[in-house]
Image (cartoon, rainbow, N blue to C red):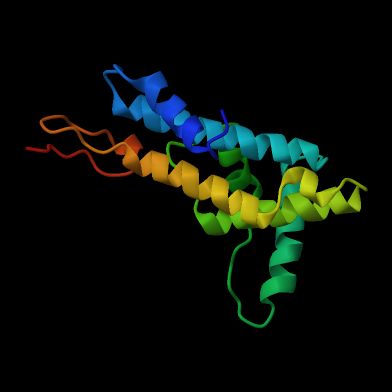
Length: 156
């Protein structure tokens, strides 16, 4: 499920209508975004999480050698979002680093970097997924599980 078009978001909403759990909706949004990341990872021809982490470190050093800013994505930090083993979306900084790695690795392998989408396209995907995720708000009188992006709270 791609979450970039309004009709896609509506379809995702309809798919979970009648569900007794808003957390299921959140989980599907995170899984759909993870599937898109995973597809781009494979399109880029990355050979493994270790190779991904090494490239991420190299890009981080080149980009932030003077500032010390840390956007490196480790092997284990890459695994969870790429395999849907998370309950929340990764941060935009992490997603942007994923995209930098995807595009650099694709270019090195003679694959068109745009085949893994541009940074602007990923920003749009991320914002759509994030909006859908946070739209899973508490229903009056219900409990919202932590998987929807906040602590469980009763809403009166």
